[in-house]
Image 1: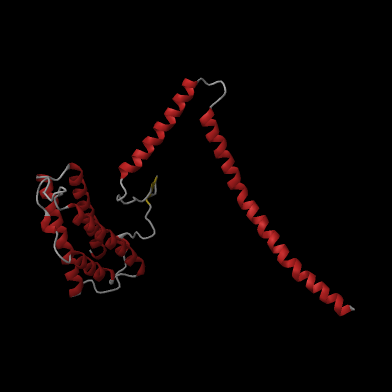
Image 2: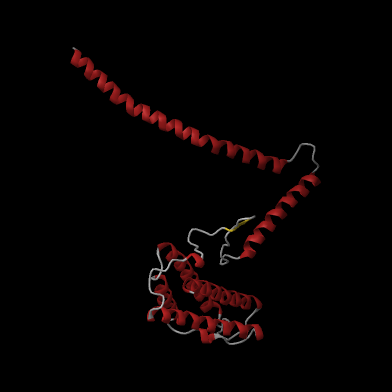
Length: 240
């Protein structure tokens, strides 16, 4: 009888344990869902209040309020669109702290070189990067003088490959933390060059006729060229 009672007790504890776990999980889900329910109710009440307005408001006042809210929302949306999707996010700046760098940003002055920066391969890599900086600067100067200047000389074959090989050579000189900063700039340089290749050629009409470069396209070209120069110079600071 003692053994039978012990078996029944074990069976009861095994049955009650899953039930207790399920009850605990349901309780946690209920607690997690409560803030969402409160937030949803608050949002519904707020929207209801905005839609209906106070009972004593005149139809003209309610229409004016809705018009003001809509104007504010449209202004905010326009500001987001004007910023453009390709603009790189700038690191936040706080009073007395200066620029707070992101997780992959590295100060070139704090870079740790573990390889031979004076090797022939390293020198060749720096020369290649400087060569493209000069080419891009020449194109940018040409656009400053004449917005219809032909800068398609930048569109050479294997440029992306050259940039990747040169920046990889510099990346291999760094320790892990410094290499993360170099790799970030490498990605930005390559992205900028892809954008250069997209916007540098003159636009074509639907019939294939070459068109003049417009103000918007000109601004994009200048922005891509300036970004490439900026990223390249910052990368070279790692081995300065």
